[in-house]
Length: 543
Image 1 (cartoon, helix red, strand yellow):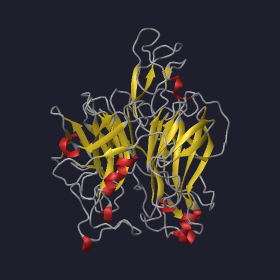
Image 2: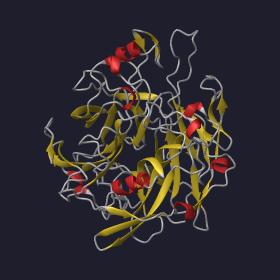
Image 3: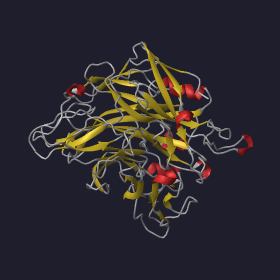
Image 4: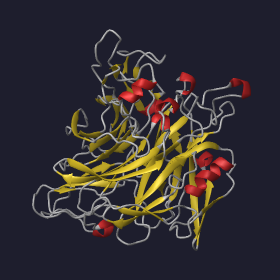
């Protein structure tokens, strides 16, 4: 094990506070707001005194009229003691996928064993991912695939051994006439969107390879009576098309029929943002809007898109914020009973970034950058996120002093057992070179303080050596965070869904930050003898 330093002492109660009772003190049923991937909730009673208790996973009893969740849908179920890490990389070894990232547990067949869905960006001949940029090279083959970019792995257990077999092609049907050209999945959610009691699947994607956006984006598979899932973007996703900012060859933004969100969407979170009892989707967009060369400054930073559920899985997409970003996570930060949005974006304010490039989005001159927002966007109660709350400080590398410029992943969890949501953020340097993590403790009244700053991979020490293209062997980052109590000590541990082309000792996929309390952690890698999760054997894909 490798030890990290203690940055702040605070009492830690952990997950042992989870209770299992029901109802409000006056006998009424609490109002439930679904959050994240549908596995945690916000409750509100009509009375202000007695605690609200929940049978749902990840909730605690509180002495107030608001029942806050303390975990996101990224919580490991208690019965899961295996890591998908091994199966993810088996998909790459079997030449199915270039990368395997973002996954969700779900017992889709109700056999009592948690299965998992994961993104498996398809291996396509025309790409050379060892190059500085994954641009299409038709001289070595086609660059597009008709294969979807996620997999469903059915898990079986025999004693302490776990076995997985891919069953994607057995259950998923795609009748959408628009091909999955350039499919590259970036985020994944499993939840009951159409209210039939069966899991559905939503995947955030981009189709911007070589700036080609003719394919389908943001795939949406809804459950069917026959037990299959049908790709339903063409039938169940509508929205507006606008050309207020025509760039990137797509002439506009919004939703085009059958395609889903046309812009490059990078991150997403799901939950009931408007309080009507169904699960909505919030999606980032990393295309800037609202500025032309004739304007002295940008009038808008960008667009946040919301897929508003109509109650049966039909989604109407609308703008619900004005921030550029690449990650976001829903949770009740201000304790008012609705879901706020913790937002992450590239730090456009750092002048050194301008010095490296001729021009950067959000910057109008060498000394004037319209910095991207990293912090809490408050819900107005109807599912809009225009009001800025707390803003996190820029994070600088320990090795170079340069600013970390991206926030690929955000996790929300009550790490210290004080019944509010703390924030875990991953950070990357220029184009995913260099990586780190911070923990922001929620200290109440809408305020946070940084209690942990880890640096996983060192970035370039000279700005002249900063990467100019994304991809290649320099990449190092955390895709996502999962949480659980892996050694059953009542403390919340952090599981890293990581990517490390540099092969560091920390950002290995499946690495666990094992909590010692007081925001101190032991680092346990999957190849360590004391790793607490079991391996899983992935059998040959079914035909």
